[in-house]
Amino acid sequence: MAAAQGQPGAGFRPVTDIGGCITNALVEAERLAVDESARTVLFPILGAGVAGGQTRPTVAALVYAALNYVTANPGTALETIYFLAHTEAERDALHQVLITTPRLVRVSQPLSGVDLGA
Image: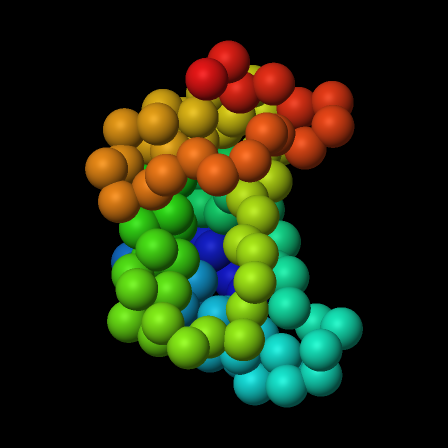
């Protein structure tokens, strides 16, 4: 999935609808989830690096797109959606989005070695 578009002389910028990229990827993942071994998706934080997107709004768009997808598809075969932060700023933005989104409820402890401070 492309999260940035380049233009000669202008450099890179985030794609206009980064959330749509997540939705499209989840639709494809859903198609692949028919095989019981493919029920988890990992998204790196996209669009906040070389594209120069603002970190928190970009992270929020990614998380909300995934949340909207699973809300609109309650029978989804997908079981887990992870987001991978490459930088401390991305991790902090992800943490803030996750703890301030009322529709999300923490149901388990973070992965081993990961401390979100919640």
